[in-house]
Each structure stands twice: as C-alpha cells, then as structure tokens.
Length: 189
Image (cartoon, rainbow, N blue to C red):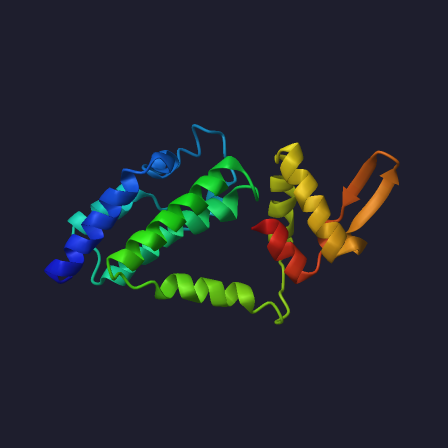
C-alpha cells in the first residue's frame, strides 16, 4: 500500500476507535463468554477494529479499499447478528455514519457503501430464503425487546399480512416461513 493510503487508513482507524460508540467494536466478539453459541453460524467472517489495525500493521492490505471493506464488514456483521433497532445495531449505524463522514472529508473511496445501497434499492428481484436463514431469524426475534417486536409486527402487518396469524385476542403468531423476500429482508436488517 502506498504511504499516503497507509496514513489515511491508520488515521481512519484511529478516528473510529476514538468514538464513544466504538466500545463494542474495538475487539473481537467474545461469543463464547457471552453465550452466543450461534454467532459463528451467522457471522462467517468476524471483524473488529483491533483486527483491522493488526492487519494494517502487518501489511495484509494491498489497497485502502480493502481496509474500508473490512471496516464495513464490522457494521454488516453487527446488523446480521443483532435485532433491528437494538442498541448495538444503532451503535453500528452511528459508527458507519462517522466513517462515511470521515471518508468523504478525507477523500477515501466509498464504492463499497454505494454497492450496498444499490443492493438494498434492487428489491424487485425475487429473494430466495433458506430454511437456515428462517430459523436464524426466528431465534433472533425471540430475543428482541418489546419495542423492536412491535416494529417487526408493524412492518409485517403493512407489507406481508399473510405471515401474521391471530391466535387469540392478545396473541399473534409471526409465520417466518410465510414472509416474502422483501419483508424478510426488512425484518432481518
């Protein structure tokens, strides 16, 4: 990596580590200590800021875009594992916003983030959802807060009402297996 890009990468990491919201992203997730036994099945490539820093110091990156890709992976992993609207997902989104602002200010390419935005806009394509993904989402939904659950139910009610089943006057059943691809994606984010 050229010296200028190396400096940009180091400064970006330093800036992100200095953020108040960075605390959960500074070191690898201790999934065993936290009892998150399914973490390795959901997050295939764990990433954190200390790992990015180590990879930069040991010359593992050839280009600045690779550093940005690994940093983006931190936020993507967080969204993939944790519930929509949870405190940690909000932290990841805040950190991603800080990263975007920093990158724009310091002329660091953001192609990866643009690609992610385009992928989210391209919702017309049918989305195939595996049984494993449905099971993972069901498990995640069981552990969300009441507020997040209310948001999920509202989304499903608006976008894919056939996936909600009235059990009695006070209970609903969310049928993950009946969610269409677009609604599944919204709920899983």
